[in-house]
Image (cartoon, rainbow, N blue to C red; front, side, top):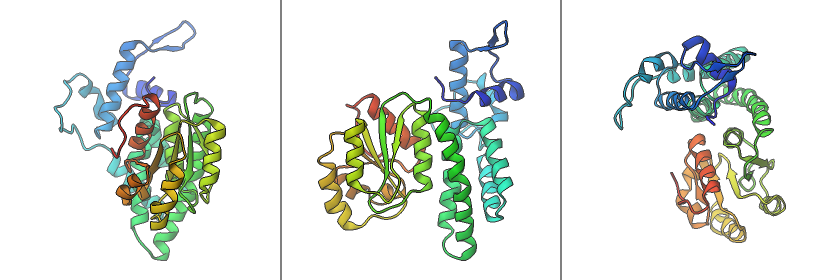
Length: 289
């Protein structure tokens, strides 16, 4: 109901006293509607950048006015430490920082506020052997880490199916891993194809599986011919919406819209929310959010 992992809920209870569910005679926790409302309020505060240690007093305060930010939060420190661990090629530090963040925050916030910004920063660091090695080291750690969590979430997903594939002639990337996991936390059944992307295979997957949407994702710029000819011809024959995700979607928004695709916000959590909302309400408005 809230998307918060049980381990995180227990940490909020034991370490910070944020929730206090009733217990059965055997010790099982029972969460009331009031508890659910409180947990959602906690998520709202965390999403505004509030440190977990600052949440308790704010729960008893009125909600802030639109545009107000209660606190700067812990994310800048987490991002700095995680990027430094990648630059130092310290696998144990990567694991420790990620585990600490995940013990206090749901993965729906850890990905867009920690992993995605660090990955983007490493990409933007540019050339040079050191920067390239740090980026590749980070990806080599992050991809199996997210893949393990994705398999867990996917095993419980029972909602509509979504086909997730790389853009034409692009390979698999961390962007696809992050989006796949976040889609699974929305209870969507994610059907993935590995790269290099082949649109014919995507069409076959959608037709055979009955997927309610197709998502193309990737980091690299798309060729003009792909956006002007290949994608329009292909998407016109699909009976479901086709979303464009990742940095490529932001770079080519107008061209992708002309090709019949729906560009998504570069924030992977917002992108996953848009896809989920569309599948829940096919009449929902499309577009870049």
